[in-house]
Length: 113
Image (cartoon, rainbow, N blue to C red):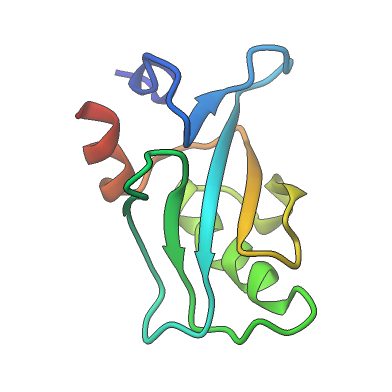
């Protein structure tokens, strides 16, 4: 099954931008800077955002930049393939991942639920 087929129904925290020429995955994220380890966990209790923890300190968007470098290999893309739509200096973010090649296992689990 291809990556695009794995996101079969629109979810609050994850969906495909169908208006784009190439596959673009949109993630709504709740960032957790200054964490003990970098990790992606389950969506928030409200189901509207995906929790992403990073070790970087929240200073002038540096934690977001760090998050992009952390996420890029997880999706099989370069950091430049991840666009911050909003939330560069906020814990609430929307990310657009251009032509993702794979999904982190934790995201695959929650897409199947």
